[in-house]
Length: 464
RNA sequence: GGCCCCAUCGUCUAGUGGCUAGGACAGCGGGCUUUCAAUCCGCAAGCCGGGGUUCGAUUCCCCGUGGGGCCGCCA
Image: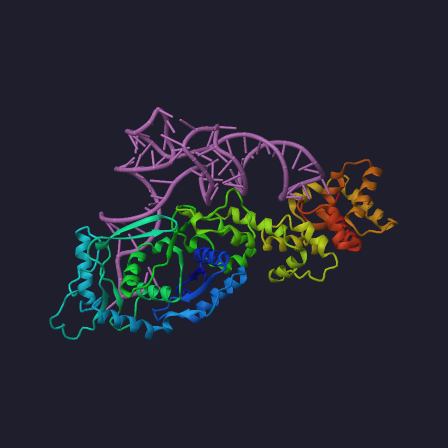
């Protein structure tokens, strides 16, 4: 049987980083098996805006290169279907109307908490046959087993046992007739033909409830995989204050989708010592049985490292295209290759890369004070002036970094100085700072005229 | 509070009834270099604690401890 997995977010308006990981796991497993990966929006609570939410999710999927099969299923559009199953259960005596008010329910809960028990419905209307109280719209509850144990095998955690009395007769339809989460999830998972349900382990306790529904309706159980959560660096639940939780924020911060996916796949899953995985490798190697049981902490260092790795390995033409969103348009630059080769080793994100490029392309508007103190001293002025003269009278072509390097070598030899004597002041003259790509590269990129112009401008500021 | 889940370097993780417990990121040191990076080499860093079982436990069992999750007419 073909593997069918799904991603079933509630419409929050954005895709959470943790959601992307479980979606990725599900997607990989489907693709690995040539199966299907379905998308469903859990919007039984009608207050939420599912159209917008879906758009946000698809946008994020597009960005990372994930897709889904078939049509998106909206639970809000399937209420008739759910109603049919509710009626069926009612008719078969597997569900019943409960006339307990919210106030009564709250009171019961408080009592139980005070006694140190797990709050749960006491089943008082389970076998009720009298006259229902006036003016109360009932909810529908499903009959859960009253004794024994609900057992299932989790593909990651192994056998899970929950005592039946831990699962109460939970509500499957609200007093306004709308169905509730655990009920519709079971029906949809069954009807959509899910074979493997991969989800966060915050759903672990929902599984026995859903099994109650599966059994009542005679549906076949899928395999369940409950993936441990991603916590923050302090081991607490990941929240907005821990940094970006919205997937698209990573795009804005200059991360490559390959890096983010590679980072996420290794959070909770591994394949020996391998760290770098292409999408193809992930698909080929992923198996949910290799997912870790324990929760992991989110620490962005490795993501940054991966991003640097993928930037270094991205073709320059593509980088140029991506950089447009970061305010750098160098697609038509005639030294494109040289420019990116000189900078891509230095930028861990596209944002940093854009900064590096701007540093070279734009003449410095000011010179770093420390750099000036260190570089513009002694005979620096004289050396720079000589260098200009040498560039102006140089007879060979000046195109490649090596061409400029030859000029520098000639200067160093003639004046019998070390490379640093010219290198440092030259660097400050070109970009205003003591860091950055090699001066040979930078001169080749901006060309001889611009080079001379920048040096002249710098020389004018040196007082000695 | 009840129930459930989890536990290897700071972080992500590999691994086994017997290994010098492996890799990666971060950290530190060094090489390369006109700078900063990149890169290369090296160093430091871990089996939560206590009981068992066993010739031998990081590994299997139990109990602690710690962390997480769930306990809605939310999903």
